[in-house]
Amino acid sequence: MAGALFRCAAATGSGALLFLSFPPLTMWFLAPVGIAVLTLVLRGRSLRAGFGYGYLAGLAFFVPLLPWVGVYVGAVPWLILAAIEAVAVALFGLITAAVGRLPGAAMWVSGAWVVTEAIRSRVPFGGFPWGRIAFGQADGPLLPLAGIVGAPGLSFATALVGAGLAGCVVGLRSHRWRSAVVAGTIPVGVPLLVALVLSAGSSSTDAGTTATAAVVQGNVPRLGLDFNAQRRAVLDNHLARTEQLAADVAAGRAPRPSLVIWPENASDIDPLRNRDAAARLDAAARSMGTPILVGAVLVGEGGTTVNSVMVWDPARGPGEQHIKRQLVPFGEYLPLRPVMTALSPYAKQAGNFVAGTGDGVVDLNGVPLAVATCYEIAFDDLVTESVRAGAQVITVPTNNATFGRTDMTYQQLAMSRIRAVEHGRSVLIAATSGVSAIIAPDGTVQQQTALFTADALVGEIALGTDLTWATRLGSVPEVALSFLLVPVFVTGLRRSGRGRPGGGPVTSVTARQQLL
Image (cartoon, rainbow, N blue to C red):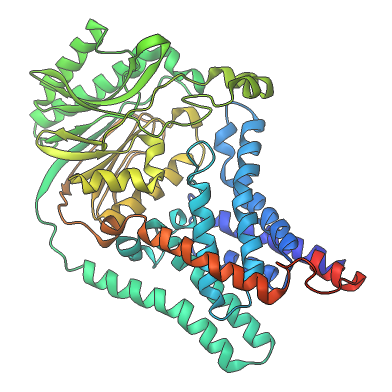
């Protein structure tokens, strides 16, 4: 009993370590330690116990990671989401219990982590990739690996280091010194060595073509879900900050940008239907002398709405647009509406948005941009598709005002840094209330704003044209690893005898051991 309680505490602690590796705490080095602790807890356990310990770790990870979900709608949606996401870590625990003692266990354990992340990134309701351990590694030494193997590969490398540490501990405890050295050196040393080589090589690359970009953060009149009750105030804030930037450019206090990016929801007044809003956008674009990428909510058919990011030209007005493809369930639309409205009165506030199509690329002043509107930056396939389609810069127009002063915006910033390295592209984050940022292709944050301030960032950015290996490969390594893990998992079941009915007599002692 005491052993089970200790393992429960250790599993819970492992989830807490994973949480601490994420922004704004950014103790990235704790992620491999968390994986190592959880792997040791799961070693030799039954499938049922592995699932249980994994679920405890998942709760300890997601509950403190996601409180921003319920900051203005109460704890119920936050805790339900955390409970659902924790199932993926429970599944990791189950798989690891089966494969944790096979030859090459560190690789299979790491593969199990990537596969379970892949599952929760796709289901239910389109998935929720938030909290992938890769997204906590923006300040870690493994970051350059993202350019070769993408975010899933960065998760794999991080988990591999942790599983290697666990293997080293097992070897030391059993006094198998050679085994401990091998188990620790290869899984820990190889990813770090490759990342070091990649980092040294990237420092000598030429930036090539550049452009001057401006990111405008107009701020919002107040915090909370009702910020858009003052839609005109939000639009006016962004207009005023753009006009101030134009004055700075005219006076020589700032360089003239060729790319100007506004946030998501900068104009919740439909400028295609409201002449006054259109006239104000015309004036802003003329003052800058360049097209502006404007986030606007458009009125659709049948009472629906569209989350659009459109090019607004100083001479021609509205042009190309990206309509958000990956909508936020329970926010921008409401699945299972009768059930959800019964659970929480706030569910009725969910929008009725319609998802867009296309490749997510718009042309702004001659530069093809990948547009990942807010939530979309978390999804591998969306950004990869846009870069493959010719995007030279990644833009993240976002509205974080509905999440107040929580960690959400810093977690999104870290994701954007991973995407910069993954695709070798500069990233421009334009947020209504912060944090807005200009990020270099190596993941370095060149400039960023504070929360809830009106500001504008102007800087020279690299325009990328080459495709990284991560962009070329896309989800291929993730899919291949998933297929490879299936026979390994079956082998683990057969060797343990737990996957066969009647795999041996079950005494009270062995039953208790399998439970714990």
